[in-house]
Amino acid sequence: MTSDLTRAAMALVPNELRAARRFAVQFLYQLDSSQQMFLSDGLLDAFCKQNEVPEAQRHFIKTVIEVCFAQKQEIDSLIEASAVNWKLSRIARVDLAILRICTAELMTRSEVAKDVIIFEGIEIGKEFGSTASGSFINGVLDRIARNTQAKGQDELDAGR
View 1 (tube, one colour):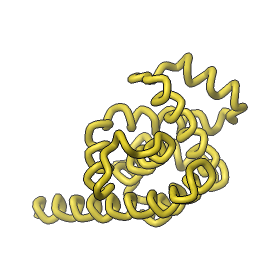
View 2 (spheres, rainbow, N blue to C red; view 1 turned 90 degrees about the vertical axis):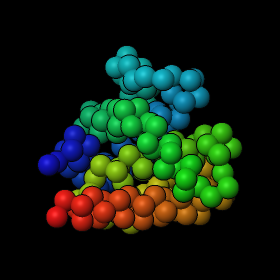
View 3 (cartoon, helix red, strand yellow; view 1 turned 90 degrees about the horizontal axis):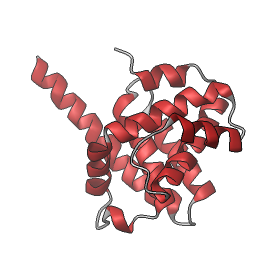
């Protein structure tokens, strides 16, 4: 079964998807910074207009943010468990936004190689984060990818 996030991503060519991920990180960071606990179409529309987000990318941004909110507890638990010796409250807000977007994709987009999602997270971290963001994001997402892959295999094995 194809997820909504997969359908939204498949509507974009790779460069558009990369740009949409960057916008999604920026929007999630903005929501987190203003302590918004829900997604409003008005906020998304204002963000897209202010940042001149192409119409084709808006559906992906909305969908990935919806996944982040709907599965926030599971996403944050995966991040905290994978960020060895780090509490969520200590992780830089921009790094946390990147980790949440990429974790949402790792959890819902099984048709994409995990390394592709991790690489995109690293590149966004290098662009928006600190000098250490890329390697920190790489380590956390790699652990999450291994954990979600192992969990998926356990579920397949249990279904036999």
